[in-house]
Length: 247
Length: 226
Ligand SMILES: Nc1ncnc2c1ncn2[C@@H]1O[C@H](COP(=O)(O)OP(=O)(O)OP(=O)(O)O)[C@@H](O)[C@H]1O
Ligand SMILES: [Mg+2]
Image 1 (tube, rainbow over the protein chains, first blue to last red):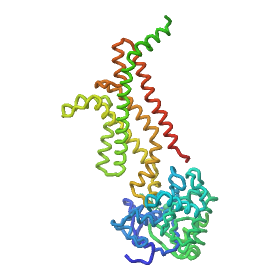
Image 2: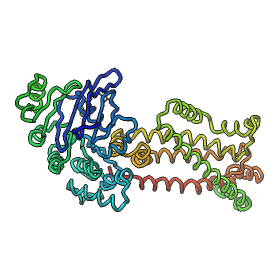
Image 3: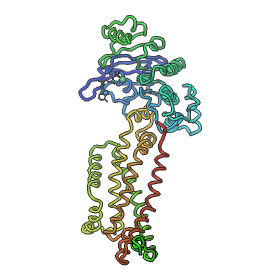
Image 4: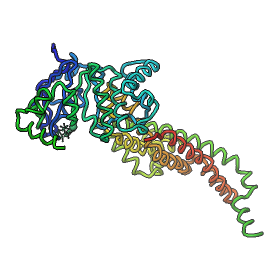
């Protein structure tokens, strides 16, 4: 399936029982692009992200990531997921392992690296998120912001082609948000393709290439941040933007 | 003779104790053998069932739940008696030792399956998702991420169950197993003196106290700062 886009999702539908959560979403993302997804609670943003790496099974549609047909039953999904990093709102670090252990687990078990090589790569990844000296701390000994940066390191250590972020800063105290956004900005500058669900409008404004507004399981409109934020063409977008800017 | 001396003479009679010490010791050996067999096979089978159950194969899970509930509700003595006196009618005739071992192993399997399962399901979904999203398989996630966390939660209830079920080896007396209690009570009726029972009690303490202490140690080793 030839495609010029690193992520090419077409006509994605997702039902949870009788609930129709995604109603035919198309999302194409270019290499090195940072796409920001916004929308009201329950509009299907998380579900869409989770369909992209098949944590959620779409009911229908097609998804190609980096040339891999994600929905083909013959695709080795574990192999494909190495190329798609995911960062969660609640960090989801492994509490029984150190920061380095968290970062090296998949390197050893999935990428097949030996212990020494995995540790070298793991330390380099922690270095990139500014936590080299915290390698031997367990998640319980780290602040929320540090935990989320370890979670980012856990993903980037595998050298993914795309990174998915689902509200990476929503669970953080306001004073810790900056450090995580800083790491994300660095990633972007290094050319990482990123799809970010977040309410950090300031970050969207100066880092996103494109803002996608979702409502009720559909993409309502999308465009450059300035266009979406200043001159949205749909009433629903206008209402949503107005709402969050009042906060 | 004072009351105290009479008490010691009756319950801690040195002559009787010395005479029956070898019997109690051989009872201890039998109890240890039984206990080890029960713990290893019971916990092993319980864990295996919990892992099978995590595969979420409906009919298989119904079967597992049925077996587990059955063995949790039957009194262990009934299972031992059925196996020893009843099974021969169907063919195999297990010895008293084997009947006691298998019966208590089934009971421990049933209780430990529930405990392991509760541990596995208590691990947040996000742990599975983080691991799977980095490409680990179901099995790799289970063994590297979920079970190590689940084990930590299961150690206290598992130790309690394991100790109380292995103490059930005393039920083996009923089917002529010469474990501690069996030796102690026959020594008691031969000597018309309860001292052997006191030795038996001491033997249980000697056997199980280290287990309790070891469990505490494992517990603290598995703890990590949250
Ligand atoms: N596993 C599930 N089972 C049933 N319904 C679900 C499940 N996951 C999500 N939903 C429902 O699907 C809808 C979309 O959920 P989703 O989490 O994708 O929304 P969202 O846009 O990310 O919202 P939020 O901003 O609150 O995170 C919601 O109505 C939610 O209740
Ligand atoms: Mg969400």
